[in-house]
Image (cartoon, rainbow, N blue to C red; front, side, top):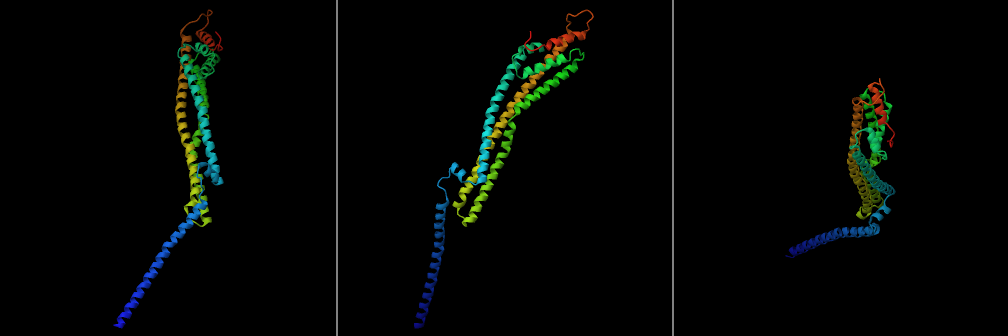
Length: 298
């Protein structure tokens, strides 16, 4: 009986020791995360900036990321400057072309068109001047098709020149729209890389150490998109407007060619007063000289 009681006491003591050891181990296991959490709170309080505004993130960013942000802001300023300047230019050019085309539609000869647009310095006036100059230079040539081809060549070159002029500045928008997202992505990658370097130096994986750097890096991506999206939209708007302007140029050039063709056929079909024995080409010569009279003359 006594032996059984002693064995029971020893079993109870062993069980108590096991429970005590388990409780101690559980306490130590629970205490470790609490100490780490307390340390993380200290690190977060020490490293996380109080202000994560755009200005603060820019001032605290890496030098490379700051350079990327400045470049993207400059690209955005260029985009809106080009938008303002080209909008005014395209609006004035289309209005000038429309007014001149309306006048041109009511004339019946090249000479009359030159007189009607004597005070104009726009595209249609250049077309008429080129046509009148070629008619004067081709005076005495009996072949009318050659005259038409040379006038068409002159008008085509003038039209191409005005087309190139109206396109100036739009290439910058295309470049900004294509490259700004990648420039912003470069700033983001560099900023995140710098944040990971900061983690390795501080020997901690706390989010407070890497969060500011990631926020600054993402700001570069946001600026890249802010510069690229308006540039692409504005470029597409300008492309449509310029296409309409160039179509108007083509219509005006075609109208001038019709006037020239009408003048040449009129010269061949309608006899003019001439000295006895003067051949028909002479009549065309005099009409060409009349059509090529200086602008503003009556």
